[in-house]
Length: 131
Image 1 (tube, one colour):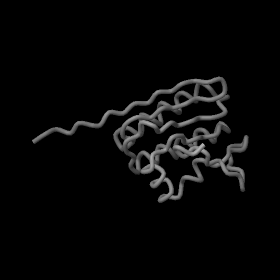
Image 2 (tube, rainbow, N blue to C red):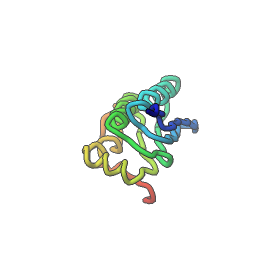
Image 3 (cartoon, rainbow, N blue to C red):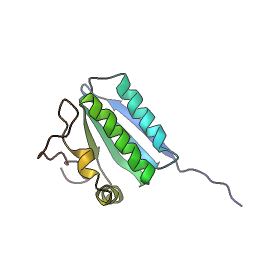
Image 4 (cartoon, rainbow, N blue to C red):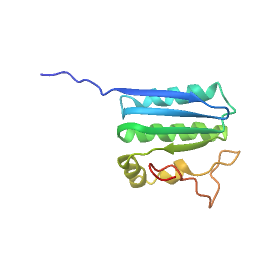
């Protein structure tokens, strides 16, 4: 019998003047989603004037429902600050799950200063390869 070896996962946050980029690599799932939420929310806690959080999924290899839930929790944190959330370099499997669960527009919609999505505006500009 072989043991369970979790896939490698990493989160790297790069600070910019009014934003930050969060590079996510590996599997975002039950075992790793708390790590992502804690890293992003902890980073924002010390920087309440961050205007934009960009999640870069270039290195993402898998996501499950716990990973999707983590994205919703991060959205809640960014919205509370009035910060925009951008989902950059989304692989096809992530896009598929976001559309299947009908949360893509919720996560990528524009944010008003009060943290509420503005009606009728399109904030989905971050599909991999589409710029």
